[in-house]
Length: 351
Image 1: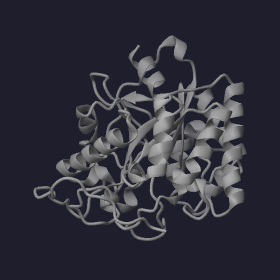
Image 2: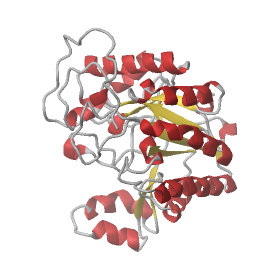
Image 3: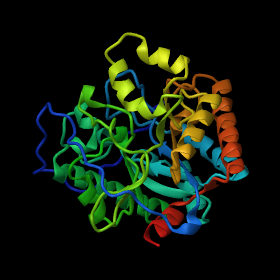
Image 4: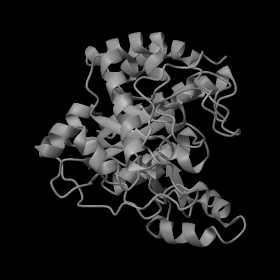
């Protein structure tokens, strides 16, 4: 069930021009690799794209703002604490107006049991000055003034509702653009986690991250804004040739599936959505072999209830996500990988 339309604060965006209908997101060139303080060791960050419910197979809609799955947040927060995870709830506009989410997540963040970050879905985040379409669903494609105003309103709402100052951002659909870094620095955001290595979103106007590194790196020369890529790696005997083979396989029918089935090389994102436990553990081992200091796990909050994402259509599939996290955290803890909070990452990067 959809909620009633959400409030739209402020005055209309009169001077925010809409972008041209084509051109993908401009690519951001990776900067200097981040070095962490010696005591940081190896860590993992559980990030949750905490967002409204919508039909992933349908066109984007400003009216799809349901947040009924927020009633699952308290139980999931308890699970995180049970397995030793410190969740980072990346909150978007509809979630920031849900009373249950505000109550549960705000209390966890203020108690130091979780972190709250910012997650911008521009099609449901005012001001509404752009056409609703796939290209504009990537916030980085919007005119700088419009991207900035949407972000500012969301950040203010999160601060007012949850009583915390968010320090981490993830653009919805990984839509980091050419002006996003400066926007985040202007608002004092220390961490971004919008980039997904090995993935290409250019087909509907998004960015191409196939050549971006999986390790954390600085977005600016002053080392004020740190990129924490969502962890995606190649595993297998030919892993070091993974990006090249992936590009070649894209032009050969069934080649990518064959490489994965033979485990010569397989692309593994660290998410419980569409990635099995055994596959995830292979990915973790490959990431540790590659000496990644920080593993960034991710999934979408509507997957905590059946029927809201393509990955979870039954209670058994919800339970599978819980089991996935238990197995992954047990494996990581056995390998000496500890949970991290946003403050831990910031302190170690600047230390």
